[in-house]
Length: 376
Image (cartoon, rainbow, N blue to C red; front, side, top):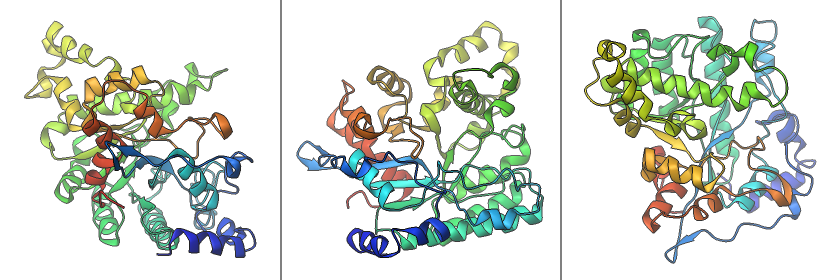
């Protein structure tokens, strides 16, 4: 892989990066503020006098060439190259430097769960190969990528997961349901078993959440409620089923991170325990061997909860060693331009963390979870 200086020099000479925008892993245009280049780099991230490697586990890319593969298929209008998924290019690197993020673990939001087996197989092979090429073109050490899998065919997804990891991709990114079907059903155990066997990092991100949660009619109008409410609600439902249907009991070694701070569940977890105590019939069939809230400690979440108090509470519930940086880049949840917020400063601005806990959230846990070096 080229170093960063060589990479940026190459971009400048390639018709202002147009080659990457046409043929690389881009959306149509980076969704960056025009003054991004004028913003200063984040100061070095140091804890107790030592530089810390920072890792963002929640950021997205897209592959424009996918549109050619999907042309004429039922997925033609579902897959795409939206402008909110730019390439790994100079703009992305600038924003990372401004945020204080050294490494991004990039993922593609699943849109292919309705594909038939043949198309799903070809699409996943194509995407994973393109993700690998993306890493090979990128500055050394700045990026890793989650693989893609066709979860609608759990046996195939298990094979694709293993192949992706052999290629050098990091586990897989998945949605929270398959066309409205819960991933806690026994048919998906073959995938969870393979993920546990491989110790594969699994990054769960909501997709088509308003439909998947059944709230589409209730979240119309102003406020973007299909996303603002729908996405964390989908994650909440996903985790709840994984607990109560016994998936986390059967596969305690799963290495799974759930986006957006784990949804609403970490904000109100004890209702699960009290629900079982109040009416044991609700939970008798689950055959859980410990309180529902105890299973939350088997999961990881990202830090995208916006305020110091929210992050403090998330840490109290999940444990600081189970939280990793997340930005949702290139979506603008952390703001843009001079008003942009840094996920690193979010950690430093939250009171109560020890130095060791800060190091864990900033990147120590993510390095272990992803299997990458803890130092640059």
